[in-house]
Length: 303
Image (cartoon, rainbow, N blue to C red; front, side, top):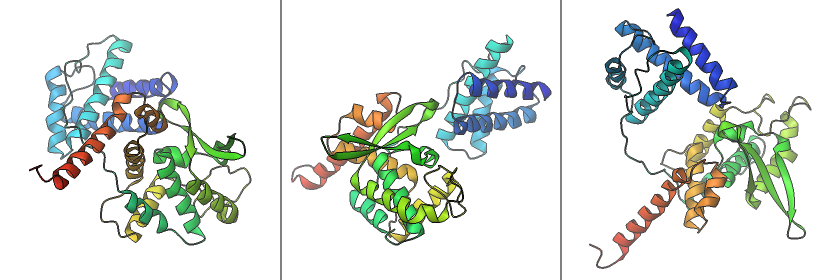
């Protein structure tokens, strides 16, 4: 067990220091490997003496615990990366090299309609805490940023860039996966919501001038990811939207609506912070699916 912990500590340090991964990613890796450690204890093995067949058995063990196929695939990728590192760094065999994650069908992102987006945003139309919640919702949809990215931004990450004479475009600096920075232009509705929040609500709850976080909770501290999720879900409930709506739903909707409106996929890739355009191309499938549905229901000889 001590050897297992030593391997894990060394690997996590490698992810932090050498690869510079985001804390959420590192936490995910740690959680996957600790689950793998439970499996190893049950079968009486360690990281250094487990066989390829026993690593494969981890897949069945996860299925017995009722994990979904996508979660199992992520776990196996985590274990493969971990074993590859240990094999190289400690000069021991890699038993996971031939173990492949289960294939999972490509699922289309779940976007909500423009009408539902409008209902969601307009559900927060009051003063006080509604100003913060409206600004958060507007920014999630206007930027397509991940919720972890949005709650991490500071007031200083908002900048006015003057273009076309007197027209000012608000941009937001976001730090995405792998520490990569990107600038995202923000539309007028989100600009207005953020301006109202900054003027009328944030000064009333901020406790210190040193606090630079844009979105604050009622105690004047940085808003958490969990609180942002709750804000989105409460707004969806207030708006009477039956579908499950999460911050990621707004990210999906942002990308889908851009492509529906004719945006270039490379532009959408840059805005989302995807390292590969292949990841972004799934949103084109959403659009094609909608075209097929419209054709099937509208064309008199489609059936």
